[in-house]
Amino acid sequence: MAKGKDVRIPVLLECTACVRNGVNVNKASTGISRYITQKNRHNTPNRLELRKFCPYCYKHTIHGEVKK
Image (cartoon, rainbow, N blue to C red; front, side, top):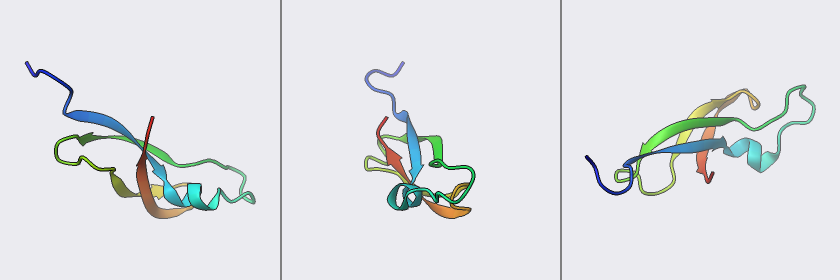
């Protein structure tokens, strides 16, 4: 059995383009794209950034890790 903290932790990824620009108010659906994934605490100690598809921006953007 492993002692101490878990190595894999769940993280929340949020679209940086939506947060920075604000979501386009002309579109019917507004919101901020968020994904839930896991990261290895030992291999990736700093914040995680991945390119994911944002349905509100209608393109692939950088999604950065946010605190829960």
